[in-house]
Image (tube, rainbow, N blue to C red; front, side, top):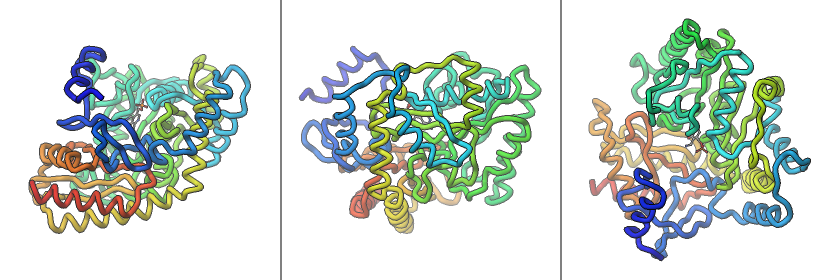
Amino acid sequence: MADNATLLARRERLLGRNMSTFYNDPVQLVRGEGVWLWDADGRKYLDCYNNVPHVGHCHPRVVDAITRQASTLNTHTRYLHEGILDYVERLTATFDASLDTAIMTCTGSEANDIALRMAQAVTGKTGVIATDHTYHGNTAAVSQLSTRMPPVGGFGGHVRHVPAPDSYRPLGGAPGEDFAEAFAAEVEKAIVSLQDSPHGFSALIICPYFANEGFPDLPSGFLDKAIAAVRKAGGLVIADEVQPGFGRTGGHMWGHQRAGFVPDVVTLGKPMANGHPVGGVVANADTLNAFRKSFRYFNTFGGNPVSCAAALAVLDVIEDEGLMENARTVGAYAQDGLKRLSEKHGIIGDVRGSGLFFGAELVLDREQKTPAPDLATKVINDMRARGVLMGKIGIHQCATKIRPPMPFSKDNADLMLSTLDDVLSGL
Ligand code: PMP
């Protein structure tokens, strides 16, 4: 195996500059199994970060489904095949009855791109509202929504950003009803601004768990007023479930179910086929048909038999191995552990999350809640040095992001917590 320095030099030469890597000392991974990863030197890491290998790295049932279908047939969706129909039937059965049809894609970005065009097809307008600090993907259209990577030339006039909810520092200063109303007021202001523009208002797009914004602790119903304002203005609500979907947050299969609302369009990606590139858009048949009428759409790879076999195997494993319930119990256990650590380590300002998507916001002082992004970077690098992989995220980039494969156990949580205890003690 080549050493890291050689691989970094080859990456820059072959893939270009500015391709990011995780950690000051990047990890060269060569193998994965369940919640474990191994590097080129044979060192084992506990994966507390990766949500794409949703049911565990290299899960044998997913590998088997891919292998069997790949050795039988793989082709596009202009031929008839039962695979895509079996999958969409199973998938849509997990949603509200109004969300009854789907388009299969290869990425979450494509799914969000389609969702925006669905809203345009239904409303005849193009103005979109997104939260600041969000990320919805990398196409020309959806990168307009992501303040994390502002497009060259700035945002289009059709985009309005509203402040992402931050439960640790709530808008207007107060939690509860006032906070929800303050958020809804921002959405209403953005709607009016778009209605007064040549673009008009077509949709609000949000991650119902506000994952990239630092997964704020919001009560069910928090979004009700904002959503009512969108509907009153004739707009669509798009729920980006790329991160919270497929049972990750524990009690619910979908983030919007946890948040207590039914969206008009749902977009899917990342964990959908355990690493095989599969995404999708779920909507009511009327919405989907309006899109197909306005935009001729075909996706060469989306919905191919191998992708659908992999995605179906993921749904089977979630169910058969009780992974949603596991996310609920192990996630609660791990969060309790983090709360205990916060009694010992003043740097932990807030502990929040749901199921197997949680973390601690790190601050310089609890009184002022001063974000500690540099220390958060040090913590995740020190964790990596001790064999535990996690990330950081959030409005202030100081929340640890713990989002492991779903078979994560209480023993795994104990190892993560004791390692974090050591790292925080050594700061
Ligand atoms: N939506 C959200 C919320 C995401 O986090 C991401 C990827 N991080 C995307 C969409 C884009 O998905 P993809 O990278 O598969 O295009």
